[in-house]
Image 1 (cartoon, rainbow, N blue to C red):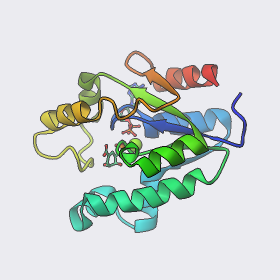
Image 2 (tube, rainbow, N blue to C red):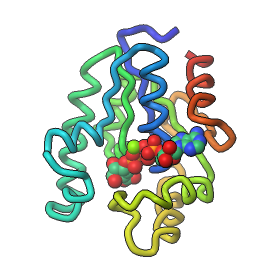
Image 3 (cartoon, rainbow, N blue to C red):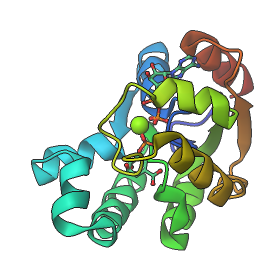
Length: 168
Ligand SMILES: Nc1ncnc2c1ncn2[C@@H]1O[C@H](COP(=O)(O)OP(=O)(O)O)[C@@H](O)[C@H]1O
Ligand SMILES: O=C(O)C1=C[C@@H](OP(=O)(O)O)[C@@H](O)[C@H](O)C1
Ligand SMILES: [Mg+2]
């Protein structure tokens, strides 16, 4: 079982289930959950889509890094990150030093179906399918630094939680 001195961190492309699995995993373990997107939205008082629209992606990344580093200084948390949190080396170092990093994966076709109805994802506006495919290609090695990887394609949310708990 993982020591409480660390956190359990979920990384992965948008649509691989980090927020949903994080909630279910935190409930299963009785741990608190920090979803860094939700933390940013609460503290900034607006949805991420609005931060992108009004201040730009670079401003969001700066805010995201501050939230990630601050969160990883804590312990005993389940932490769901946003899909792009792994892009900054500062974030990758904080995630690796402060937690057991678990990458959730799914084929791009599965991701497309899972996020198709969610119009709030700022990176997926306009030609939605093309943008998901392009991002998946750009990010295909971005999550390889994780301590472990779980393919969520054939698992329900609870089955992903089962798989994580079995590996702790
Ligand atoms: N293992 C799974 N099987 C089926 N649907 C899933 C699974 N994990 C997540 N989902 C669904 O996929 C969508 C995206 O999940 P979400 O947790 O928002 O992903 P992320 O935070 O990685 O973007 C949600 O509708 C969620 O209910
Ligand atoms: O992949 C990305 O760069 C992003 C993923 C989003 O989080 P989810 O992975 O929870 O959708 C959110 O942080 C923002 O829209 C940027
Ligand atoms: Mg999420």
